[in-house]
Length: 172
Image 1 (cartoon, rainbow, N blue to C red):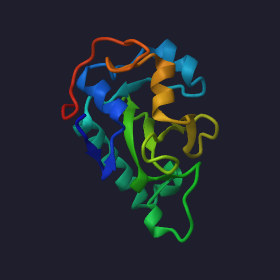
Image 2 (image 1 turned 120 degrees about the vertical axis):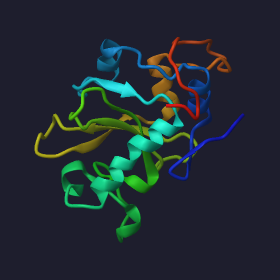
Image 3 (image 1 turned 90 degrees about the vertical axis):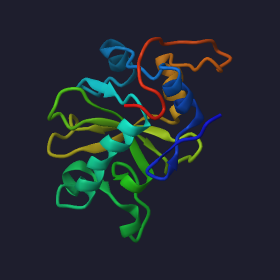
């Protein structure tokens, strides 16, 4: 199994497989609404490691300036205490899905604070309190999130779900 890293974090093998096989694809807005009912804006699933890396750079900008409070993103290494939700530690996370419409500033991220082998999935929430973003748990693990969406790699014993898509592990 090939390995990939984003921002120094090992990409879960399941995500590597889904990307390589073209199965890391958006399941449709209705399905996303079923899985994340509080998430109101449409998302684009990043098509490869390079795109995830590129999109995640925006978190650095917000963590390093006064927008940190608005977007609830910080660098954990600059805090004296562990960073917990509703804050996102940009040093232990990267974006896997981003706003489809320019300017929406919404995303889903893999958050490695809970499990470096199978990180939880968190989403930005601007709807509960429109004055600022808070990060909320979408799924306790990436594998649970993928299973809920029916995204399976060909190596999964549960069969294959999802189809189509483009971009490989290194593509965008």
